[in-house]
Image (cartoon, rainbow, N blue to C red; front, side):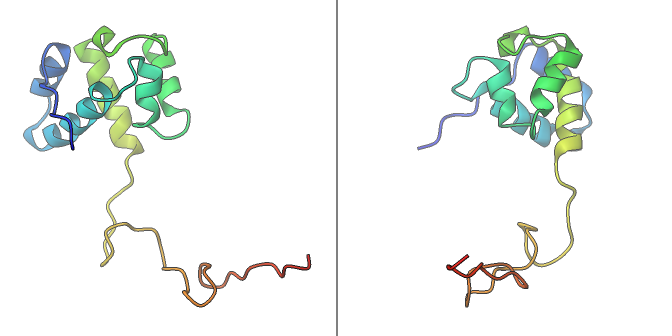
Length: 122
């Protein structure tokens, strides 16, 4: 069962209005990821949105505590966060596979092509 998408209002809506039309879908995904999470603190909410320590670094650059609530974000914060989130997204790749994880594992030995498991006696 999925939870309803939270309505974008307040500073997030102000920031959304400043974005071009084609960027709003991505912005909505970011807002949903931050607001719909079970974590009330921004540090925990951003951990799932930005890779590695990106969320903590963004919070530090924005002058916010990792324990701050999403309601503390201004429109400028949302725009800055969206820019950081966009830069962290993987670039689209051409090719048949949408996941873009490289070649499939060889089913004969369960490892990527060219990789072999170490013998058990080592």
